Image 1 (cartoon, rainbow, N blue to C red):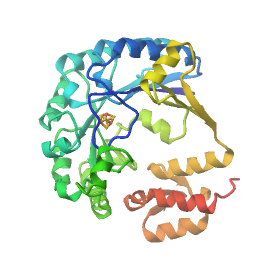
Image 2: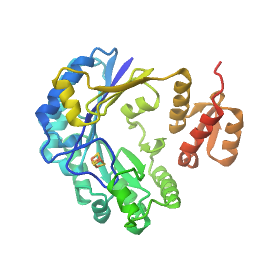
Image 3: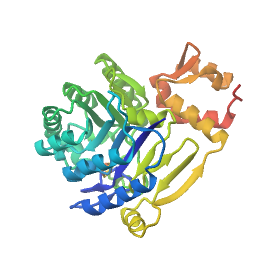
Length: 374
Ligand code: SF4
């Protein structure tokens, strides 16, 4: 069995207008306290079986950590968890804000073993970036990609957000063209959602902006499928597309239901049956570990039925799809007629239209219950 390690770095310099993640807004990252806490947690949980296949530094903004702190984390974690002696290197991803990709940071990350960077680009339009409260300017995205390549990190993913309010007049086709011109290996496309108590939610409540428009959301999502396919990308998950050989091995582990270990505030872990999650607030997490207590806030053990439904949901999310026998025939046939899924070699896979209504397909399955497996 392989191990997948997620390390949550909760710090951000400000809160983006749409973000409801568990973050700690800090001008200066308390790197020493963070390292002490995460490494203490890792030592408590490092006796998990299997060899390490991936490490993913997500956030928050992991690139705000001083580069030597990233190096120390990689070194200690690969020491604590077993690393395979195979030619297939551990995939080590760092989420980065384009602002933080300086020559010295990129060289240090590469030297520490980081071999994949996920850049929070979001848009190439400065007006849109300002509306999102992002801290980078559009021109920094291309600079960051070039700097990473010079430092030897070629496996670069770009995050983009679509489905923005119409009054912003965001040019989605232009943003996709500019992203593709940078020749990333991977793209993650997220539709804007309005989460309670975010600045965006407040703007909408007082009429300063409009909720994202469903038709625009659908048009932009379907356009991205056409545009990216024409450029040699394949969607392997509802929000993720890659060039051949560049899927995210870490995120694919989540989507195929494999076990993973999470470190840091709000991080989740899963052993195949039980999911547990850490205290979400940085201070509460830090204090728990400093006092020698567990940082786990709570846990749930999935019933057989919950595991089955979760397996169906994860299967529908990915291009792997599901074996046809796992679905009630009544919905499988109708979904094919509607053009939401295709069936080849006894597997059912969502089309882009199906992925657009993934939640309602899953709700339908939940209502119907699932067929008994042989
Ligand atoms: S950088 Fe990411 S985690 Fe931080 S506030 Fe923005 S969206 Fe949230």
